[in-house]
Amino acid sequence: MADLLTKLSIISSIIGIILLIIISDKIIIPKSSLGSINNSDIGKSVTIEGTATDVKHKGDSITALELENKDKKISVIAFNSKEFYIKEGEYLEISGKISVYNNNLQIIAEKIRK
Image (cartoon, rainbow, N blue to C red; front, top):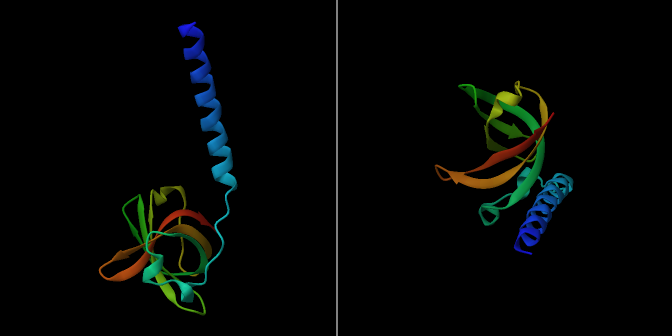
C-alpha cells in the first residue's frame, strides 16, 4: 500500500510540475509604459517596449542597456544573455522585475523578444 501511495505521489508531482511549466509560459504580463513606472512598482513584474541604446556586453553572460521610447528611458540588466545578442537600435519587448540600483530604477530582464 505504501509503495502504491509513493508511486501516486511521484506521478502527481511530475504532472503538477509539467502543468506549471505549461501554464507559466502562457501567462502574459500586461505592457506598461516607461513613463508610468515609479518607486511604488519596485518588485513588480512588467513588460515594456522600446529601443535599445547604450548597449554594453559584460563578458559572455551579462548585458546592460538603456531601453527608451517616447516617454522615458530605463536601465535594463539581462543575465545569461549569451542566448541572444542585442544590438544598439533594436526594438525590444522586455519582461522582468523592477528594482533599484544606485538610487535609479532598473529592470532585471527575465524574457527578451526582438
